[in-house]
Length: 183
Image (cartoon, rainbow, N blue to C red; front, side, top):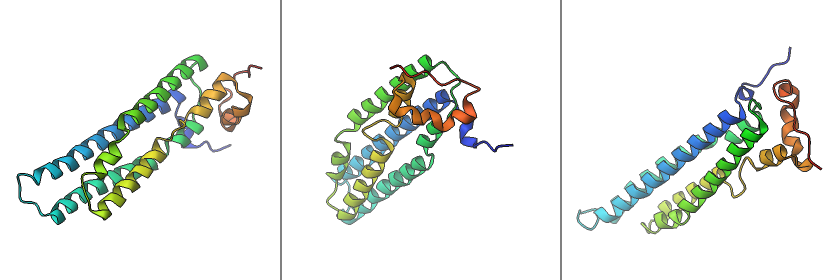
């Protein structure tokens, strides 16, 4: 008997839901961290904070953001999508995937400039380096080309992208047949 990956236990729709929640968590964490870092900067105007103390507090917030982003990367959502099972109609999955791609793009637009804003709150080089590390990790988690683009192409019948569907074909073909490519 073949062992089935536990990752294959998720349907495409469940993976979409997981990705949507991940995007919401990422946005919340980035915005709240940026607000806290800005608050530390503005507190120095009325409270007696040395620049060293301010840098330490801001660095602590940046480290929390980095830890969060590393945990999000550990979820490995792209692999969940790759191993997912088609339980809904391809039309329904396609519509939900297209909405997900739009949500990813809107998130990219919403946070555009946020990293530069955060960096501008401090002159501490260690803090700046840490924030840029967070930015690189963020960009890994939210690449310019959606993690579901190949899945969308496969569902649409793009012959160059059928390799994505083929990865789970043996395990999942009884659940939902492969779409026929449109030529």
